[in-house]
Structure formats: structure tokens, C-alpha cells
Image (tube, rainbow, N blue to C red; front, side):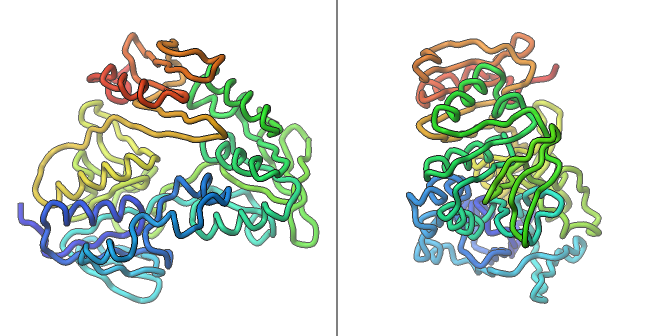
Length: 393
């Protein structure tokens, strides 16, 4: 395989920057360009719903690397200019500012776009949280409001609810699950999360979908539920999932199906690769297509893509890992927690909110969850063995 003379990374995300860093770390001497839709240098997203939103960090602290460190990468940063299309045959990316950027190898790392509710666009007081600017705008609104509703009972929604409650805002959390994160963690852990939020003043209105928003004079006043209840709100945060940012690839000829479809080497076409939340790749060990939305995978997959670009022909077969911090709970997950898994406590005690749980499916340990026991959970990671993300049913 011939090493490309020039690499273009589309997306100034954690995955995008990790690709550039891995190329340089592995001795790549060619030209590297990083294209980003936002005007900011690459920053970390997990702190946005926690440290930045709470005000513990200034927004600048979320930047992944200081400017002087980035300068050592000898890469061109083209920021504030979104990709609008890709010519696969010519390996050229066109941008909103009219640029045409070409390279021998292109890495797509454009991440996700938040889902929205009908009628929320242009309505004051309604927020999503994906970018640094959105975190700052939400914080400013929360500091002047008395009632907030978070629409979304997954990881992001519960983190935002915890942060807002910590700021002294009266928070209501709503979503279709019986308990927060019930689909992800199962009843044992999700009931503990529900209790944690209730103890800290979060009102739970779960088990009912959202049908729309109420407003007056261009500002949101409430959230309408399928049950007929209206939750009054000065601020509404919509946090019920996101979709891969692939709209700019429509018409490119690349396969798009819940992400940019890639082979086991994270390759979508000759000279075209993907890393991070946007990538849906073939996991050879499991013989399934996977797309992982977490910070750890973004970095690991980016490093693997860099290796493939430089000629290392190995499949990408990770063991997933993610974490969430809510109030004083630090939860780490290794592997996959299937909805039909058998859950057993292997260390600690839920009553003291320090424990490790193993998730088994068809007799195989597919995941390990630690609640305020990060080291103990990590030590059980090898128990996943060849199961990786759960094996085949």
C-alpha cells in the first residue's frame, strides 16, 4: 500500500484531532489539513454537560490542546467552514465558504447532530447541547430561570438535569422510559439513578412521550406530554438523542445507513475513512455492523484509522467503554449492557452506592458496570474475554 502524500480530516472533533495526532506520532511526514465547521479549536464534549454547564470550568478549559501544542503538529487548521459535499472519485471536499480541498486520503469525523422537536427552532428558551456555544447559551439561560424541563432520559439528559439542579434550578426530567437510563442499564441501576435525582430535587415525569411545546410571544412556556400533562418551563433542553452528521455526504455515492458505512478497517471507499460517532463499521469478531457514540471510541478509532492509512491492515475490534458523572455518582461501563442481560452484583453494595455489577447474556459476561468503583470495574474488564461487545445470540 502506498502511503498518501496528503491527508484531509473533516471534523475538528476529538476523533478528528486524534487522527492528526496519531498520524504525526507514527511518523507521517505528509501534509495534513483539519477542516472544522465551528470557529473553535478542537475541544472536548463530555465536560459541556457537566463542568462547563455548571460553571466549574471556563469554556476555554474544554479545549483539547493549547494552541502552542497544536502548532507542533504541523497541520493546517481550516475552521468555521462546514463541509457541504464530497467528490469521492476526485477525493475533494467542498465547503460552505466555497473552498475545494483535495487529498489522497480523507477521514470523515463529523460526529452527530442533535434531534429536535417540531416547532423548537427559533423559539426562545429552547436549547440543545452539542457544541461549546450551545453550552454557554444554555448556562446563561439557566442562570436567569426558575423552572427547566429536560426532554430526554438518557445519558446526556440526566447529566444536564443533574448540572441544572446543582445550579439551583427547579428541574423536571421527562422521557418515555420507566426510569432514567432503564434501556441502557436495566432496572437495578436505573432505579438507583432515579432515586439519586429525586433526592437532589429533580422531579421525574417519566413513561410518557413529548407531543410538543407551548409558547407565548416567541418564548417557550411548557412541554406537552402524551398523557395530556403540561410541564411549565422557562427553559427547555431537548436531549433525546442525535443522528450521524452525514447529510453533506448525500449524493456522494457512499453508503449511508445510521452513519457512514465502512468495512472492518473503517474504510468507506478507496482513500475514504471514518472515525468517531459518525462511523458505522464492520466488527469482524462479531460479524455485525457497529456505531459507538462515546468519547473513548472516538480516540481509539481515530488512532486505528491513522494506522490503516499508514499501511497497517488490521480490523478494528474494540471493547467499548463509556462513563457518566451525575451528582456524586461516577459510573463506568466496559463492554455492552444488553437489555435482556442477567445482572449480578460482584462487589460492593448498592445501598452504599459503591458497587460493581456484571451483565451476562447466554452465560457470557458482556459488560461490567462500576458505581463509584472505577478501579474495581476496570480490573474485571478482562472477564469480557472474547465476548467483546456481547457475542452472538
